[in-house]
Image 1 (cartoon, rainbow, N blue to C red):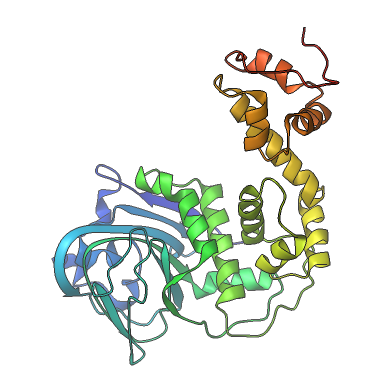
Image 2 (image 1 turned 90 degrees about the vertical axis):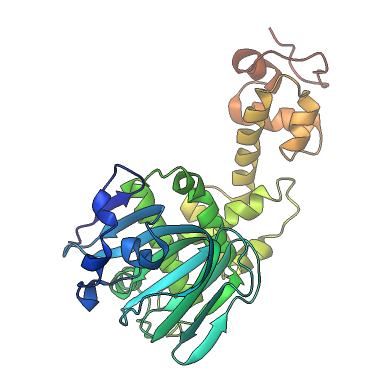
Length: 347
C-alpha cells in the first residue's frame, strides 16, 4: 500500500529548513535536486508556497510550489539532472515574451502568449537549460512518472512512455484547477490531505489523457473523471439558463453524448438537467439572503425564465416557497417581492 504524507511549507516560522544555505545546496547529490520546493526556488530565493505528497520512500511524488519575485535581470537557473517527472508551470500573471526562455532537448522555446494562467508542460526527462527574469509569479505542479504510472494502472490506461510539451498555452482544466486552489495558495494555507490528493489525481488524469503520446485508454469509462466533473460544472454554471447542449458537454469531456449522459448519471445519480435545477436552487438560496433583491430578480439571476418557473421549481425541491424560505432564512423580504398566481399565501 502506498503511504502518502502531506508536507506544507508556507511561510516564516513554518518548516524553516525549506531554504538551505547556498553552501549546503551546492553539496547536494544530483538525484536530490528535484523541480519543487527549495530546489526549484534556489535561484529565485525561498518559495512562497511549498506543499507536497510523499511516497513510502519519503520522496515527493507530487508537489505544489509557488515562486514569485520582483524585477530582476535574466538569470540562468541551476543545472538539474534528468528526472522521471513532469512539470506544469502556470503563470498567475501574464509573462512578457522576453522574460523566460529555455533550451529543452536542443529545442529553443519561450513565451508564446502573454496571458494569465498560461500553462507550460515540460517533460523533465529531456535535457534542459532555463533562463528567467522578473517580475514573475508561477504555480508549479511537479508530478513524478511513478505517480503517473500508478494512476494509469488504477484507471486501466495503457502505459505512456512520452508526453507532449507545450509552452505558455491555454489549458482550461489546469487554469480552472489553479483558480480553485489559488485562495489558499495566496494565503499560504496548506491544502488538506484530501484536497491535495484530489488535485494530484486530477492533474495526473489530465496529463495522461491530454498530453500522453502513448496508446489509447483501454477501459470503458462508467463514471466521470474528476477533471470532467469540474469542466462540466464550470460549463453549466456559465449556462444557468440551460442554453447548452449535451453534445457540448460531452465534447468538452472527450466522450460521446450518450456515453457522457450515462457517466453523469452514474456519477451524480440524476440527469444533467436535474443537476442543473439543483444548482440553480442552491444559487437562488444565496441570493435570497440578499434583502435588496426581488424574487423575480433572484429567479432571473439563478437561471429561471420568470418568477413563476422559479417558484415552482423551488417549491418542488424544497417543499417551501422562496417567499417563505426568505422569511425564515434571509434578512427580511423587500417591498418589491410579489406573489405570483397560484403561489400559496405565506403565513
